[in-house]
Image (cartoon, rainbow, N blue to C red; front, side, top):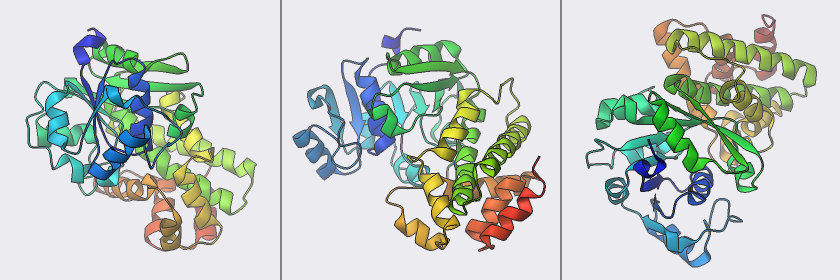
Length: 333
C-alpha cells in the first residue's frame, strides 16, 4: 500500500495531541482536513496561524488546512480519519457522525476507553459505526504532545491488523525526529495506554508522598508486570512488554513533568482531596476515567489487579492515601 492510498487525511480534535499529530502530518501531506468543535476557535486559528489554546508556539500554514466544525463534512471528505480527542469526550463527538464510515481508515490516538461502554475505541467503532477491523489503526508510544511540538526525538508505534496499512500510515507521521514502529497489537496497545495512565496516577501519589526514588522504581516494576498479566488475558498476542509502546509509555507517563496523570496523582499525594485535585487540573487527567473503566472491566471478568484496585480505592472510595499505598506495597516484589 502507498501513502497516497490513505489520503486525504482528516484530524478529529482540537487539543494538544491532535495539534501535535496535525503538525506531523503536515510534514508529509500537501493538505489536511481538520475538525474542531468550535467555529470561533477555527477563526482564531486562521487569524493567528496557530492553535489559540493548545501548543500555541507551533505555527501552521493554514492555507494547507481545510477546517470545519462539521464532523460529518470532514469524515465524508477524508479517506483516513485520525481521532485524537480525550476519551471522556469521545462519545460526544462520535455520536454526531451520521455518514457511513465504510471503506474509511480510522486511526485512533485516543488514550483511554469509551466511557460507560468500557470498550476500546476500535471495538466501539466497529460495533457502533460499522468500521472494519482491518481498517482500524492505533497510534501509541511514549510521546508527549509538548515534546513532539518541541521537535524532540520521539518514537510512535502504529498498530493495525494489516501490516502494510500500518507501514504506509507510519510514513505519514515519520520524520527525522519522529521514528515510527509497526505492530499488529491493536487491542494491546489500547489497553496499555489506559493502564499506564492509571499507574502514572499511582506514581504521582508516591511522588507527592515523598516516598523516594527506590520505591518509585519498585512501583514501576510491579506496574509493568501487572499490565503484562492483564494483556495476556484480555488481548493474547506475541508481544514484548519491554517495547516502547508498553514499558516506555508507562515510564514517561509516570515520571514526566508533562504528564497530567502524574501531576494529578502528585497533588493527591501532597494532601489535596481528589475533588480539589480535579478542579486544579487545567487539562484532562484521563487516568481518572480509565481507572473506573478498567476497575469495572476487571471486576466483570474476575481479573485481580492489586495496583489498579489501590488507585480505584483512593480515587473512588476515599481510602486513606498513605495507608492504601503501603498495604498494596506489602505484596510488591
